[in-house]
Length: 370
Image (cartoon, rainbow, N blue to C red; front, side, top):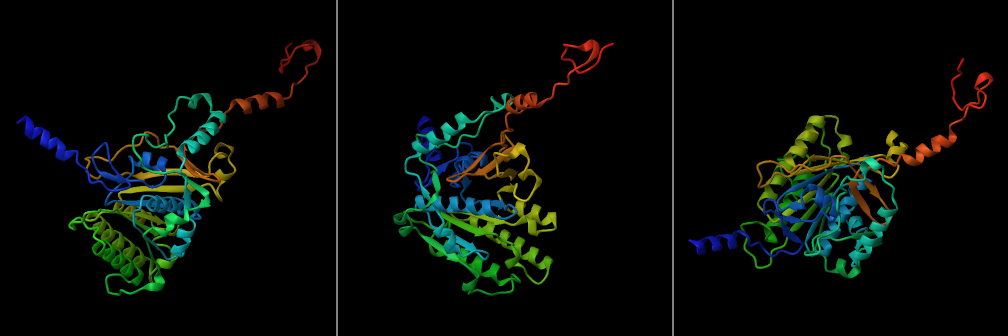
């Protein structure tokens, strides 16, 4: 009886040795990194295999593109194949703008810590936990990147990157009114089947396919009417999710939610996804000039977390998250209000002292006494 129990434990703790993956400590779900280590920590350790990450784009789409570049760069470094699709931007531009991986994470960590030590945080936030974006020393999962340098050429030469654009449409049928959805769905299906990413396939060396779809549902994906455009988008997501559920692949999709007037469509898109985050940029809004947000470029809203292999989705410890794009890195952290003691001291210096007259001579009070 004891030997059977030991064998059962061995079976449960045996995970496939796939590069760039790790098992979740919560539900043993196999995970891959988004490339942004702080985002991995927020969503539960990483992206589960067979899931969809929805990134609701900021107003101008700048930060959503940055997140996609991190996701692609992580695939290049871990030798995971990539399928990138876009109609708004040539996929080759994403490849040419991938950030360089930092081979010395200790130097990166020291730089971040030195900056944090110089920052003065208000006393009421000193005991608040900040998201730890440093990888565990006992395992390699996720990397650091330098946005000011291009990806190393030797890594790009060995990368398996497949690109899709509307100029190469081959498939047409009556399922979608916009044939671009049909062609992209067939491209994904053929890639999963021909390169043995399906769960039913048996292969000695298993890899994870990273699928990136940029600005899905934008103006270039429109049909004749708004109703047909929304119907095509939701139908595509439903079919796309079905393909991912039966394969060793992960999809990251960005959607320009500002283009949708119907909020019900956005809610259904989030429902089709497993994890949904929204990027709220301060650019062009009143928050851009608000001194409370002077250290950040936008807010990160958690709309949905994965519930795969669990009875209930994971709850994040903090909901007040913000992001900032520095010269070399993209950072997500808990939102901290600026310190108040400097402003208070300045107000005390600037506050005029009203001199009194009469029987109040020599007193510093502002009210007259009789």
